[in-house]
Length: 267
Image (cartoon, rainbow, N blue to C red):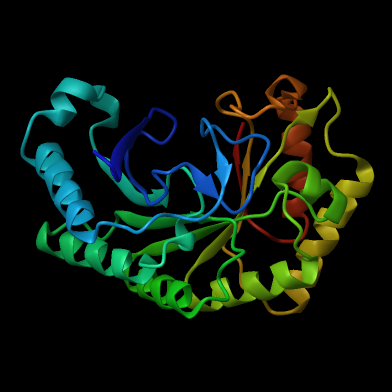
C-alpha cells in the first residue's frame, strides 16, 4: 500500500492505522532523531485521494472482517486504537489535507467504528497558518481528534540543532494557540542525549517558561507527551544520540506537572 500502514504497539495495547501523506520521504523539517530513511527537505506529493480511500477501506475490512488481527497481531493488541496521520514527513504539507480528513470521516462513519477510536495528527505545527490545514484540524475535532504538536526545545539554537528549523517561540505560541482553539492539542516532546549530554538546566528552564507563557496566554493544552528514542534514528547524527535515564525523564515530567499540566511519559 502507498498510504495506509499498521503500527502494532504493545505499549498501547493495540493497532494504530497509519496514514502516510509523505510517501516521498519529504518533510519541511529534518529532525535528527527521525526514523525515516533517505529523508529529504520538501513537501508531500499530490495525493491520490481515490487510492487512499480504497486502501483505508481494504485495511479496515481486513482488520474487522478478515484475518489480519489473527495472523499478524498478538492477542493482547487485537484492537484498533486510532487512525494516525503521521508517516514519512509533515502531513499538513499535503495540499489535500482537509480532503483527506473528510475521507477518513466518511469511511469511519460507514464502517461504524467506535467513537473511542481517535483520529490523531502528529505535526510540527509550522503550517497551521494555512486555511486548508485549519479546516482539516477543525473537522478532526468532531471525529474524536487530537493534535500532537511537536515542540522539542524552547531555545532557538537548540531547535536549529534538533529540528533543523528556524521558527521563533512567538510563532510557535501563535500556531499552538490556533491549534488548541480548533481541536484538543497535546505538546509532543522528544527528550534524549546528544553526545552524552541531556538538556541543560538553561534549556529546561526555557521550556518551563514557554509553558508558563502558553498558560498565561490562555492556551488550553491537553498536556505534554514526553517521548524517548523508541527506535534508532536514521539520520547522520544517529551515533551521537542516546536515551536519557528514566529517572531524569520523570524528574523533568514532575517539573512540568508542577505547572498543573498533565504529562504522559513514554521512555
